Length: 261
Image (cartoon, rainbow, N blue to C red; front, side, top):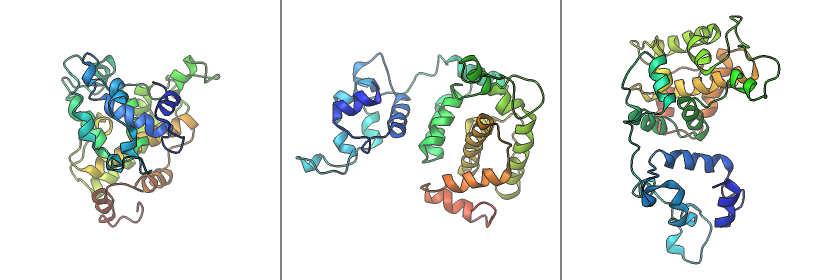
């Protein structure tokens, strides 16, 4: 269902439900959807659950004016069967030189890494390899001049694999990020294949948050063709810490690293 149709059905204004929030809801619930069971398919939830439960405005029946819990939605759904993995996930296993990755845990960790819907949405798209890259935009006719990498002189196509695993500009920048992590958070941190960067499954939530911001920042800079700088990365870390979990914010502040917070 489109956003406009969803708003019309439930008589919602733009202020009640933004496109970003609607996208986040669909992405979040879709993880647990079972299309083969009408009672456990997210596309049918609109018929069963009133959005008034998510609003603070007054209603005729005030006892229904309360926030709905995520578990109340998940009770109508069931987890995805990861036995048959989508091709994008299989490609990541090839690129990261791993087999039989626990994608259920990886996606669960993604939704626990940050409160920021933008970071979650982008990383979700990256895992399914539908996040933007210059080669993709060139094939779609959005980029007119070239499909090749704009941040290095290698002459390689700017694919998702190139951006995150191959580009020399990315390699140089990630050496700064990894050095920061090993210096202040985890002295044993070692990620030569970019496993922790892509999956966000490190045991320290601070590392996963820094990597999630890093992934988003890399995509942004490649799209705008701007250089990768440590100062700009720090700016976005500080920006995305707004509204984050207290444990995460305090955990980074306790590092006494004025260069970040």
